[in-house]
Length: 382
Image (cartoon, rainbow, N blue to C red; front, side):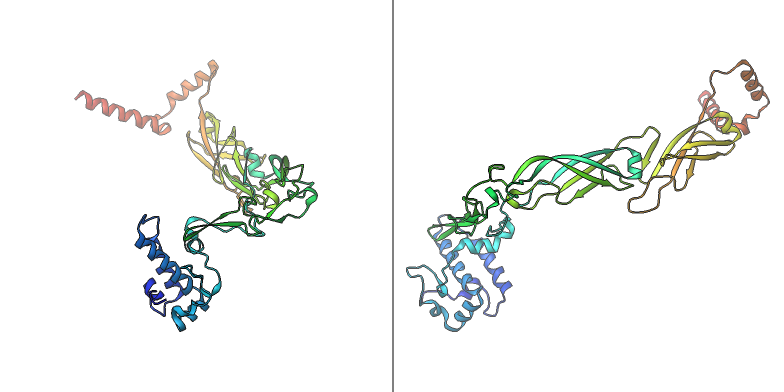
């Protein structure tokens, strides 16, 4: 053991370094001397092996205490011999274990094992549902039919005939992982026989073929809350595809689309409606009745002299607001309709009206427009 360097020196840390400092130092040096980064470099390979040996001891409290007291001699008895490092007779697991421990979080690796669901939960599903604007206002209860996978009834989702309990995998002994030695390195991978579950089914279910689920169209009752908007997503937990062999199911997501309305245009919680009114009502004022989204009618007062484009507001007559008892507003945009198919009497009356009227006060917009046009023409003549 005389030729061995001090483990703290190998990692470049002080003897009072805490676990975080040890881990950080090891990570940095392991990446530097990793064989993949230093192919055919014997010196890098030697340092890499030395790093793993040092960290294997110092990361363990009991081994570190023994090393601090006795040095390398603490592991001379019961060692692996022949260069095989085995501190404390525990069986050195090699670089595969340490590297996965240190860098597994970056590589997305997780160990399989007994009791886990190697296949993960079932897939999430999407269902597109179209609603009318009235349905979005009132809310709706509906039944939908979703093609999916459900737990197999004969085997109760286990995948085994008669729902028999699975047996321990003979290949991995229930660990879900198998190892193979390649020189200094130990390579660990998911067990190919049980796919990481640690157990296998002796007699697969004849209905589902051992999958624990079958394809089926499922009918669900769903409640759409009042006030939903176009593009709203609703999650139904656990209503997605069943997982393999008893794994948790996925979720179902409802994506809501709202059809255009023939009268109303929605803007958040507000509703806009364009309402044509007769010219006489616009000029003299009056009242009109308009439809509302709740299926009722509202009486609206039109002020005398209302022009096209004038907007009137009906407070609290708009859309429902989700998770609230309040409503948005309704906005009415007035369009003044020019009369058509006039009788001779009506034409005469309009002509008389035009003669006795004062266009500057009665039609200020048109009068102002043409006055400006005349100014432009005069400037052009000059």
